[in-house]
Length: 99
Image (cartoon, rainbow, N blue to C red; front, top):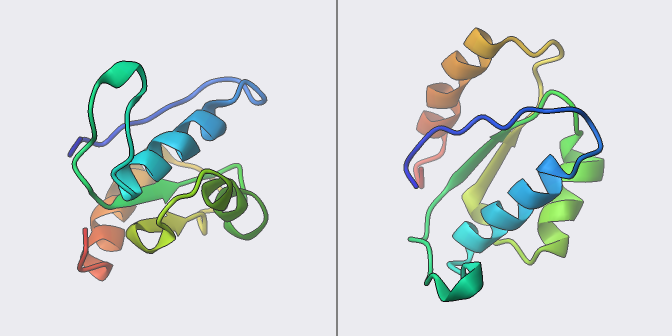
């Protein structure tokens, strides 16, 4: 935790489903699988160039019982540019005092 992580790959493989589960687990300080304990409770920033927050990301987070108040979602960037996304992270983090 406390790291910036990029997950990339072909569409339809389940990347965002797995990441939604990880975000939910961190947000509510749930249990990791295989009895590996609990993550520290923390804030999550989701930058998505593919999925829409309102109709995809937030419903997935709610389905995984996430504490959505500790998750910031930013998908306003129409064209995903890695450098622009990296520059956006501190801006989003500074706007949310819980980060």
